[in-house]
Length: 228
Image (cartoon, rainbow, N blue to C red; front, side):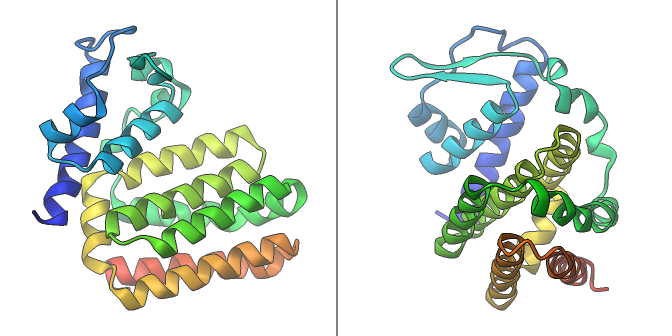
């Protein structure tokens, strides 16, 4: 069974759950099917199902109770990031890239001031897991987790919500298709090296170098995705 099919299954699962929660079919308090059932129904790996559920949990849409299961916690409209992101379907990958080039180089200024050892440990974990990833889907998950860790390390809730919106746009199908087509083994290695250099600069509280690495990284992604 191809990895592309299973990746599409995970995306379809995410779309299904958000839509069903949004339209009230899956109301607050409803228990979701078990991971195994969702895996079989959407032709997605168990790991992919867990990642989808983890993302919905981080957005406040579901809650997971050990020994009891997974339950709908809120409709998307009730979460701040979702309310801000109602129009994300109209945001193109090119527009996202432009915004990232403006916003993300500013992150080191906050991270070098407020980043904690726990923040940097999380960044290291994300990098290590991305380097160990066997599939593009897994690499993309940990790449996204690293960006989330960077947002958290700013300790600025406004910045976190802006970057959470960017993450939602990254999860759109068009961005994923562009990334999948462009992510060669050589480019992945380059991204990993840039991630390492960025986190090392942040640990050293070297704002100038960290900003330069982010800019180089984003420009590299832009060239790889759009050929410019």
